Image 1 (cartoon, helix red, strand yellow):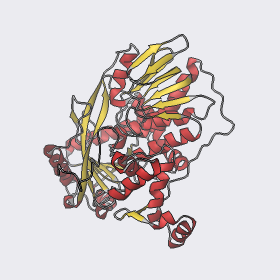
Image 2 (cartoon, rainbow, N blue to C red):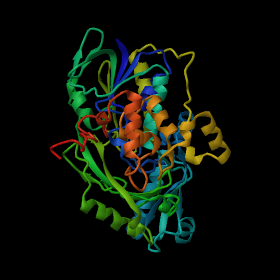
Image 3 (cartoon, helix red, strand yellow):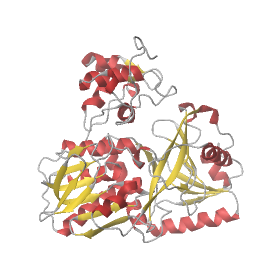
Image 4 (cartoon, one colour):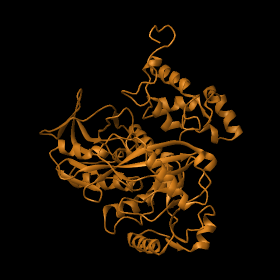
Length: 479
């Protein structure tokens, strides 16, 4: 019998698991995919928003500002990259100026510090690469960037280091009320728990319905992105937005914490919760909008494109409520959900305390997690020491990102352990460079197979139905 079961291992479920692992509770995180951070967490803008956009008085506004203020220290504790680069909402005409002034006033009411309206000269001094058609901007110095899936991996890993359990490939099919709490069942397994926290993202409405609550719905909003090579990473230093619309914050141009340049996302309401295909129309619209922001857009340096789906709730705000004793929905966590995630976690902890659960702090809680080894960032002396201590750090596997065998083995051995190619990618960046895994994939497959005692052919890209190798060509009469 668990004290708390968390359904969903994205950044929200991960941050809640970490916050709860401070206490003497038996915690289990259930994830329907083969790894953590497989939903909206792995494909979003990676922006820590300052908090000027959300409606005054909303949960989004309150938790965004609180989460933004918490994020730097949380990332430091978890060994996750965080860069406070600031954000700019640029305007081109009188209509945009009115919107920007509204955002400024809203941000002040929301408690965002340091907001400033910049004129053309001030704006282009900050960002020389901007189009001369951009005449003014809202400057938010507290805006920042992180790695969202890195944050989720670290938060869940820290929770596991403090005793929490993780069950992947656990697709919840039924929730049954019992005398002591709930029974949560997949096709093959059952777990019992006193409390459930529903962090199932796009599927949170379906999970809630299993517990006889259909008070809200979730629809996917499709967002496509273009990622440019590290050559382009210094095109701008701030995150550049246009004025937002009813469909979200719009297409942005932003550096990433790993030195690339990110363009996107589009914003299209959708019906299919599993469709993450990119489209020519979507990618073209990203390029067109980026060309409005920048004098020159180096789109020829595109190394990949991808699509994410945002979980848009029917209420217009974060849905964090308890429809019945022992069951908490944390749903509709679209933007600024990543920014708000540390504050959401504390909000849910307080809800559990108010519900009557007994929570005693652990005497030996581990609050920190070492940052992952990054051989490419080490000094020559540090590299020599690393190789001397462990020769695996002297073998470069991914030439584009300069990722070593030692780093890949770390990812296979550190909670939550990677078990497939995409898991290695998210933890180490191997396969994320210019060749997108064209050279390093076979060796990574070999390392995964060897470490897990499985065959080369058994290694997958992201779990079930994603085989990479289907058989040998030599000696096969059918080929």
